[in-house]
Length: 476
Image 1 (cartoon, rainbow, N blue to C red):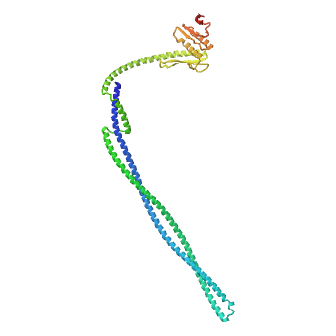
Image 2: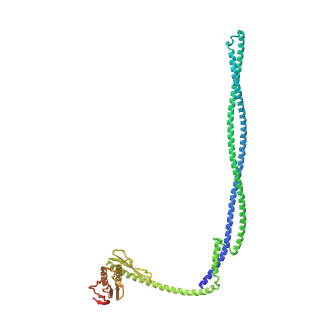
Image 3: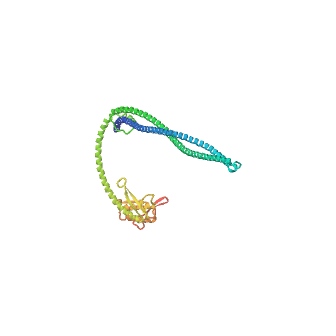
C-alpha cells in the first residue's frame, strides 16, 4: 500500500504539475509573441534609422547634384565667354595675317620697283657722264647735263623717300608680326583654358550622372523601406491583437509567471507527464485512506523500533567498551610477542615484527607477520616473498614467541623444519627445547629430518616403514 500511496501522491503531483505546465505554456506563448513583437519593433526602429540615413543621403545627394549643375552652368558660361574671346582673337589674327601677307606682297613689289628704278637711275647717271657728252656741243651739253642732273637728283630724292616708305612699311609689318605672335600666344592660352574647362565639365558631367544614379537608387531604397515599414507595422498590429487574446486565455489559468523555457520544451514535458499519468490510470482514490490507516500502524511500530534501537545502542556501547579492553589486552600481549619474536629471529640472522590489522572490527581483526633475513627490510610473510625455509623459520619463531601466552597442557607441531637448512633446524630445535623447559606442558614435534635432540631431556619416537609395515621404537 505504501507503493500504491506513493504512486497516488506522484499522480497528484503530476496532475498539479500538468496544470502548472498548461498555465506555463499559455504564458510562454504570450512571452514568445511579445518577444516576436519586440523583435518587430526593433526591426522597425532599425528600418526607420536606415530610412533617416537614406533621406539624409538623398538630401546631401540632391544638394550635390544641384551644386554640380550650378558649377557646370558656370563653367559653360565661362567656356562660351572663352569661345567668344577665341573667335575675336581668331578674327584679329586673320586680320593681322592678311595684312602681313598683303604688306609683304606690296613690299616685294616695291622692292622690285625700287631696284628697277635704281638700276635705271644708274644707267641714266652713266649716260650723263662727261665721256658720253664729248660729241655734244658745249652749250647744249651743259644745258642737257644740268637738266639730267636735276632729274637724277629728283629721282634720288624720290627713291630715298620711296625707300623710307618701304622701311616704314617693313616696320609696320614687323609690328604686325609681333602682334600676331602675341595673338597666337593668347589663342593658345584661350584654347588651353577651353580644354581645361571642357575636361572639368566632362568630369562634372560624370559626377552628375553618378549623383543622379545614386539619387535614383536612394529614392528606390527609400520607397522599398517605406513599404517594408508599412508591412512590419501591419504585422505588429496583428501580433499585438494576438497577444491580447493570448493574455486573456492565460489569465483564465492564473496570474502571470516568469517563463524560462520555450513552448516546445513545455509541450515535450507535458507529453511525458501525460504518458506517466496514463500509466497511473488504475490508481484508485481510496489508496490514500487505506495508506493512512496502515501509516498509523507503521508509526506505532516505528516507535517500538526506536526504543529497540536505543536498547541496541546501549548494548553497542557496552560492546565498544569491551572491544577497547580487548584491544588493550591484545596490544600488551602483542608487544611481548613482538619482543620474543625479534629475539628468536636475531639468532637466525633475521628481523621482523607482528602487527594487529583491522583492530576496529573484531570479526575481521587478525595478525600480520613481517620478516626479513640477512639484513633485508621486513616484509609481510607470504608464499611469494620468502623461500620455504624462511617461511618455516619465521612461522616457528612466531609460534615459539607465542608459547608463553597459550593455555594448553599439550601442544604438537608437524614437519616444522622440512624446508630449513641444517643450521636453522638446529637453532629452532634448541629454541623449542628451551621454550618447553619449565612450562609444565607436553610438546609433540614431528619431523622426517635428522633430529638435534641428543643429550636433551626429551623422548624420541621413531616410526619406520619396513617391508610395508610401520614399526614404532622409542629411542630415549
